[in-house]
View 1 (cartoon, rainbow, N blue to C red):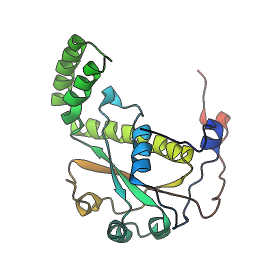
View 2 (cartoon, rainbow, N blue to C red):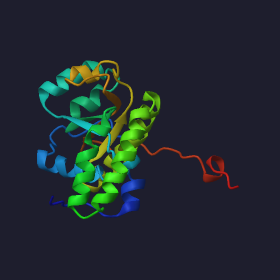
View 3 (cartoon, rainbow, N blue to C red):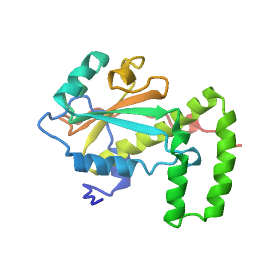
View 4 (cartoon, rainbow, N blue to C red):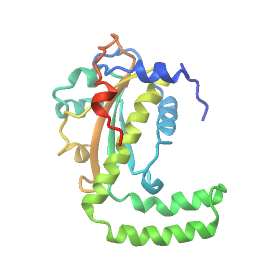
Length: 212
């Protein structure tokens, strides 16, 4: 992975972020750079490192045409952005546990005996895990990667808009995913802003925090 960031100024990345609705349609993001952005974003934390997030990058005219009627209140973002990333949470995330922990051993991140002990405990945990608890956990994890993806995009010089208003009931099947397995989290438009976007007020810390 070779990354050329536009900025490493974290405060500028965080405080300069805006939810952009209108993008410069002439700006495209190469598959190579998009892969870098997703790889960097996917360093986000997740419960027992199961990394339950899954991405569909919708950047072709055909893909956007399919998405348009499913994002009826967000047509401009779909039409003008370089891409819309559909973020899903995988209910079958434990299917990748062996790959994740075996690779950790191979890379020297953990001893083999630790991997075997943890895998046995995790297998027992997931065998008894209620579906609702699993769903809640992977949605939290996928929210973490979504925020990290927005900040990573800004570091690369792009803008984003998290979109919650779309046809969540049908989007998985529309893009050939099993709707029972893949839970929609959000759409994230990405591209170069055609305008600066709006600043927004944040509640003061005194309102949202208590010390005990």
